[in-house]
Image (cartoon, rainbow, N blue to C red):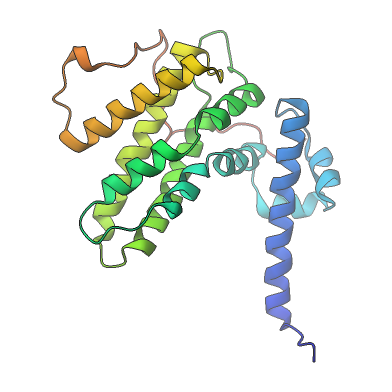
Amino acid sequence: MLTTLPVEDRRKALKSRHRQDIVAAAAALMDERQATDFTVDELAQRADVSRRTVFNHFASINDIVSEVCSDVLSAAVASLTAVPASDGPAALDEIAEAFRNADLVAPMAYLNRVLGDGGPAVTAHPMALRAFTELSERLSAVMLSRHPEADKLSVHLLVGALTSGLGVLYHHWHCATGAVDTPESRRSWARMLDQLLETVRTGHAAGPAGQAGQPCPSSVVSSNHPSKGQTLNG
């Protein structure tokens, strides 16, 4: 016999489906146009929801784009779940293996194409950097579920240091390679990633000889302070 979900559960399920549909529609529009210049009306039509429903879930186009970016980078989370959980204090080793196994170059190159450079200066886009901050939250949740006995603050500090470092790497990698997906850009990313992992493991004592890349003329954009961006008025 079929069971009917309570009204409140049906509402939650519908709300979750609408949010997923909006994000999926935004991802499809970004992929088709290789840009983020779609309007709210276009997004609502593609997601088969009303403008009001879009407003109910997101405050700005940038918030939607940020969620798409975060989903694109979720390969690191998927890779972490594939790494066997250790019995000892080896959380860094688990995350390091996950980062090395995850193909982050392809999604980062994709984000560069659809987001654009944002100006004449060669710099990482704030939305891509913001996605690394959201990636930190996802990775922390996975690590705490794998190690429920671990100190929550310690896990957040470790994951935060690594994902913030990824944002810095993305900026330098973008400057050095143009954020394209080529064998050389992949080797460059691998070198920078190794330096990040070693720096987190041993501290910041490495001298200039250990630097994997040179900074761009512009300053590194902080992933903790993304631009406000476009509001949902289009």
